[in-house]
Length: 225
Image (cartoon, rainbow, N blue to C red):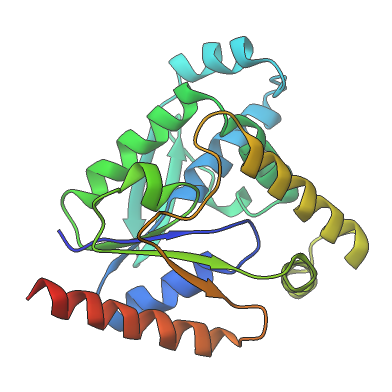
């Protein structure tokens, strides 16, 4: 299949770019991070200690994780419950960052998204997509931006959604702490694939990033033919 893998730190706008490019280029959009956030949210909601790997793995054994599409939108089921509406919360994001270091969690998520990528032409964003999950993807991108810009984007998103949030400096600090955890974890630390393409979006508008991604997809398709 023709697959596009997008890696990068939290808050870089990977999902927004991937969704737009999917619509324009006729690809199925898969947000792998949504699966991690879903697990993180459910574990937090049920009171599981996210700093206790044994407790997480025990819960994981009986957890059913499923990805499905409705009205052209991706949804995630955890134990039969659609948790899609809750995965953009700070609670879900922080939970995802903590549990993503566990091999058992990563294996469960990867099983679901690899199955999707084996049957559809997809564009997929998240952690370690080009380096671990889809190492043979036709195109691998690493989308990033400065922590200041990512914090501002996150603040704007939370304000627009009417969700509670801290000030800009607090959000920036949380993003930088998450960057450090993701880049220094023992299992599959966040990094760009050796054959990946770097896109620093600090000084770019969303439409400019989408344009560049679509151009790179066209070039990758031409190479295959």
